[in-house]
Length: 279
Image (cartoon, rainbow, N blue to C red; front, side, top):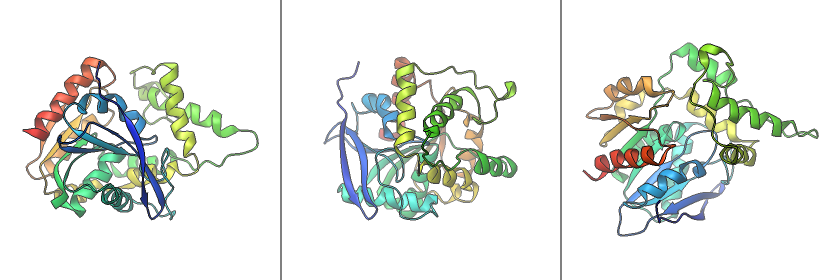
């Protein structure tokens, strides 16, 4: 069990405030971790508690997700979200950092590393989706619908099934035997917390999710110039794209990590990241 304590705070940006979680301290090097969709940085806490032994970590909620302010435009794309991340780092007084991103957060992190490569010491991309065009179009159409709260509270029922079915199927709305993920459900408390993160931003969660699903990475990955690790966990539905993604990034390396949902898996995963980042 780690003794690392998670702290929380806010940093001002043009849109309002970005909420973040932090742990570790100087003189350890700064690691910025960017979460996947549809929740927020809370999902990263178990891994942060291990990595926080070696790094001073900041993990923001991206604009329009969890406890961060929404975007000021409906035309949210990955460059906009990457700019929001970089502005948050400015507000926190952070210079050059190690940068880690998972799924949607990986898209944001890679775009930030293209925009300001001098600021990114090394980059870790955890789960890179390189969907065929027809699959990507289906995901953009169906995977992250806009939800409006109503007088019957249907948004509560929808959010529960959206999060739950995301563990059972990929994609969540293809509830067919051949689409079963077979990874099981988290416990009731964890599932509740994940649903609450979605409900916090129920009006805006879909903007960043759609931006990530529609983001054409094949044209962007070759533009990365910082040392990069392309990784994927044992149960990651995007694991199949790891080698293809790495081949598009000059000089990158790959790693297949253990299951971060277990204590031993988190420790082994953190060790993989740490060897790359500090090696």
